[in-house]
Amino acid sequence: MNHFYIVIALTLAFSSPAVIADINLPDFKSYKDVKQKKRAFFDYMLPYVKKANQEILAERKVVAAMNIKKLNNQQLNRLTSLLAKYRIKDKKITEQTKQKLLNKIDVIPASLALAQAANESAWGTSRFAKKAYNFYGQWCFSKGCGLLPKQRSAGMSHEVKKFKSPYESIKGYMLNLNSHPAFISVRNYRAEQRKKHIKHQGVVLA
Image (cartoon, rainbow, N blue to C red; front, side, top):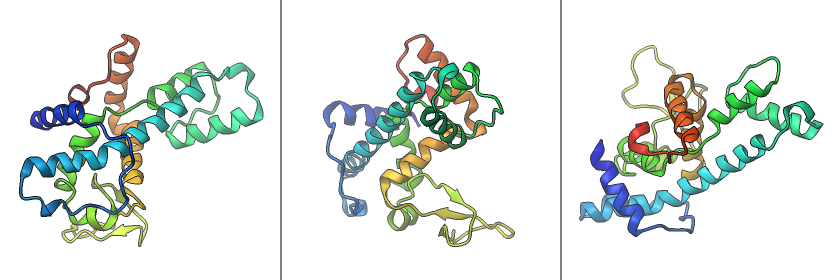
């Protein structure tokens, strides 16, 4: 997967769009030149990735500023909401709880988010990307919550989640990495990098 990061590094170096793209997904299959298709895909997705990370940093800033021993009702409600969002079930809120939350509320490197989106969605040309804005193959488990996989195994009941926009898909992907128990090693390593003031790198976290 390293070649993804080489391509992405060049894209980020020479193209850093600041304007959120139109919600309508471009027809990436129409590109005959592979390099142009890849650049178009990254240019389309990058603003959403940046926006999602900005939202995460805003949440992190709120939590970091909290004094756990002197929470007002508004702060307590906000903290309780974030604990639920990031799957932390501590019965008592302590400084350790706050640190658990800060370990989860952190950015996902753009290179990692873009590489996985490209890989999972076949550069934005998959059925799930085009019909459900799902760039990461994320599942859901209630009837009608998404699209039915054409090759779903017998006995399986999942659907491929349908999102309202590419931005919502990216937010869902980042929340999954930041909250699901399967990715605890990624979060722990990222936390160690932050302590050492090392910039998060997608290829390392991958």
